[in-house]
Amino acid sequence: MKHRLWKIALLVAVLLGMPIALFVFHFRPLIPSRVWSAFYIEESALQQPAEVYTMLFRPARVFIHLPEGRTQRYQWLALDLEKQLVAVPNWPHLKPYLHFNDDMALGITLDFPKIEDDWKINWKDDQVSFSNGNLSVHLVHK
Image (cartoon, rainbow, N blue to C red):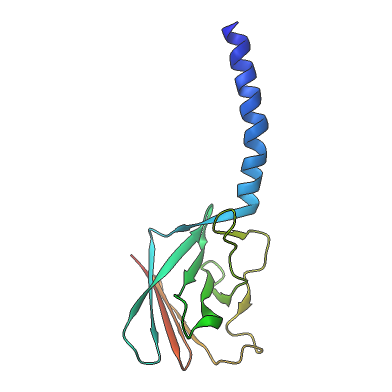
């Protein structure tokens, strides 16, 4: 009897777990980063902290969230550390949890000709800095 209950429990776990795992794999949650920190400076103001998120199971994808304000266009910034890309993404979705679709493109890269601002991007081993005339963002390894 106990053996049969274990088989049923295992079957239910697999049947429920697989769809949930596939859902989470496709709609990757963004989790607060323990490895990276970021700050920004806007129009020669004081240095302000920014929120940094990494994509679950993809630690090379980093998202920086700047608070609402004059930087509305650049409220979210995405980085692919493996490819050394900085982009303006489609904003991550908030429902049912903060996530970014794994199969979506990262966004429009800051060095793309259609971006109106002229961005300077500086990659180093443990930090990334990028700035235009009004906004300067720095991502630093803790």
